[in-house]
Length: 565
Image (tube, rainbow, N blue to C red; front, top):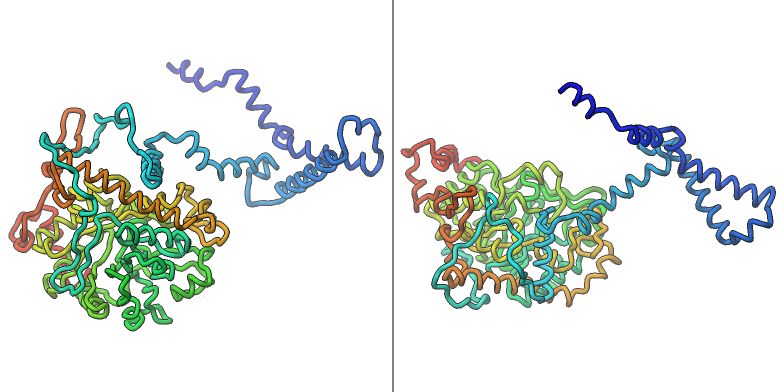
């Protein structure tokens, strides 16, 4: 055994020779030495002695070009040797640059040549193509069966009926948002554009999204970057997201300004106001707009400086307890003349959300809606650790919010929206099966306006003009064409949803329940979501102090206090 291990470690002679040749001093410097030799040789021909015979083989323009290029590369090699930032350039002058070139092109090479159709990085080619086909109003049907392995663990599907019904009109897929405390309830589509700020996205992208929303009668969330002229230009319904930076309604020192808020909130185009507590891409961290993307216009709209990155505070300054938050909601309701007021969050420490629910019960101030953002969300830039390892994914977060509201006896008063990597009709139906009343999609609509997942949103160099403030780049985005694609994507996705739920014998997405969604547990067992998960009964939490403290919901409820998060 020992001899076999030693033989495995010993390289074959050809490998040893190749390894030695590639790592000699001359081989590492060979390209640079070649450039030096060419430069010196042509310089000798030009300055000291020029043999006439050389012109039989090489023209003057070619020699001059070669002289210039080799001279420049020689100087680059000198720089590589003298610099101290990159060891690879010092050891491999000129050649070392290929590493950085290939590293820059690696995402494109992977996306176009290596990536599998089902590799979700973060969206798979299948998902992107589905959006592109529906946005272009082309047939998205696939022949010859599913590419998905239906026997893999966690495979999910909708259980169909032996007696399916006729697909309903997708235009009827709407819900009323606004409880008895709201004076101007809003009739919303069940699929809308999630939070996308002007600043993160270009003016033309915002125009196209809002025009598409206008044409399709669904809403467009502003993101926390405030209401821009481009959100209002085409008259589409707007949900104003109010983040901790209070952009669009802030004082010079960043505090909430009620007068500015009132002027904006009472615009007829503003249908709802959404307080952002946290977002899936970077929960516990304020929104980030890199300095390179802050134009003079954005600085004026947001009321911020252009000298540094625009980073929102990680928490709100207008409230510090759940009860204060409820009073802030009531204040916004009054200032907006009774429009629906709600909040968005990514679930973190569960007792903190339950503290908000206890504050609702104590103050009897009931928000009109809650939007649950999954940690898989993220249309903007964020620190990698927050993207990968902070926040609760959508399924678990949504189920927790739905269950808590049911257990507190509030579910009938508060509508629940959901966002987080929602693209297809199945994404919508599976999300609604675990408690959502409607869904929002951000990156799905970004694909519809032309996003190719280049993942350069934070660089201000988006190749298709979607996530950039570069005037030339965003001119490539033709607003009327892309607006139609936004409309088509939403319309065709809801049509597919209508056909899917009709197969289950359902007329409206609100009829989708947990028992309609099934999941493979292993290679021999399948359970529906009603069997898989724990479901609270109406009002069950209200008497939980006497219940089994081993139960997660009862234990978290007993930890929660309305006076503190």
